[in-house]
Image 1: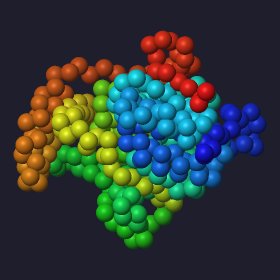
Image 2 (image 1 turned 135 degrees about the horizontal axis):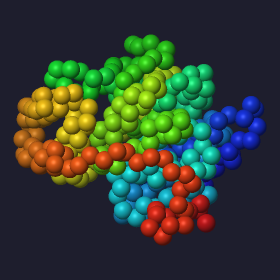
Image 3 (image 1 turned 135 degrees about the vertical axis):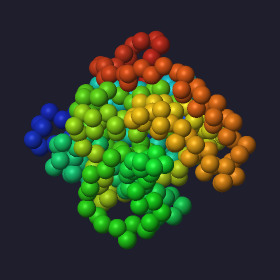
Image 4 (image 1 turned 120 degrees about the horizontal axis):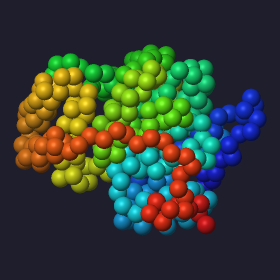
Length: 328
């Protein structure tokens, strides 16, 4: 039995640390979920409110998690809402419960015990920062960096990770401003959602984080990389279990993002898609490319709606809303 309970929202704001709502999304992969939750239980930060969003798992995840972590707040969506939709369900719930920051996590991650201490320390000192990203290391190579944030490359147009596959001992430990931060693990200030809304559910997965970062920077908020905060990622454990879905959604999300931010899209879309097709063909993925391109076509056709705005409190009694429980 493990304890994931934290404190209630603070009333003595000058004495108590800010409450962090931790939102973990899961779709099957029970073993990963249990390991992720166990690492969260080891966090050296008491002012936390942990919420598990189950995106329609079919592997008995919920009853087993409820047994292992009694009292854990669980939202059952009943169907797979994708990364953006799953995160949004948990984010709205956590903010309605008084969270001042949200830590979003994929279920195929683990975190260092001092992760929140490090992130919150910088967040409080840098109130203009809306997103704070920890150093993301490879789970199977725990001293090798998977991502230290990302930047935009003009040609061929793409968003590329910083310091990928470098050993963490080679790099500086100072916080730095970045353009993009992957959503496998991020601390996001409440005001970011108040300013720009939630994640765009038009991105089932892929690019929902890049889109959110674009909107945050357009609102004049900063995104910071905090290398002293560390976490580990197993990388695409859920998405790669369904190859056809993986390739189709990648294509659709790519087209959607470059339609919105390509500048001009008429040039950036063919350049970006052409680059991806050539790269994947060289890597031996020719058979997957028709599925990828069908996703691109869907992404070019589908209307783009504004991202949903934050609405509080969450409609907890709406019969059509995701089911929530606190282990009762």
